Length: 135
Image (cartoon, rainbow, N blue to C red; front, side):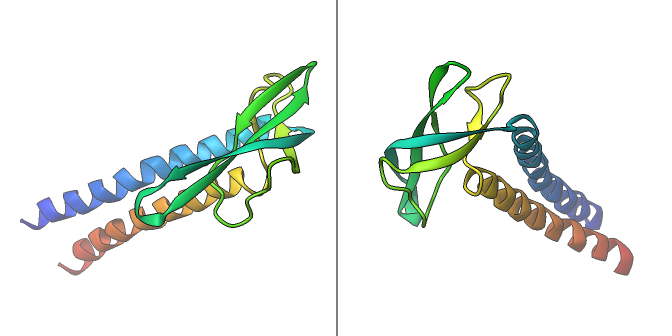
C-alpha cells in the first residue's frame, strides 16, 4: 500500500514540475530572443472575468519594428495597469518582430508561475522522500 502512495505522490509532484519547466523555458526563450528595444503605445486594455479572483487586465500595445507596425497583448496585470495612450518600453525579437513582451510585466508573470508550480510540485515529492526514509 505504501508503494502506491509513494508513486502517487511522486507522480503528483512531477505533474506540477512539468508546467514549471515549460513556463521557465518559455520565459527564458523570450528573454534570450527578444533583445531589441522599442517604445509601444497602449491602445486598449482587455478586461476578462477571471472567476473567483475578479477581473484580469491585459494591455494591448502597438509598436513599430522592422519597418512595420505590430500589435500584441501583454499578460495579466493586476495592479499597475497602464492607461490607454501610455508609452511602455518593450523588448522584441529582431528576427521575428511580432514576438515581444513588456519587461517587468510579462516576464514577472512567468517567473511567479514557475516558482509556484515548482514549490507545489516539491511538496509531494518531499513527502514521498520522507515516507521512503522513515518507513
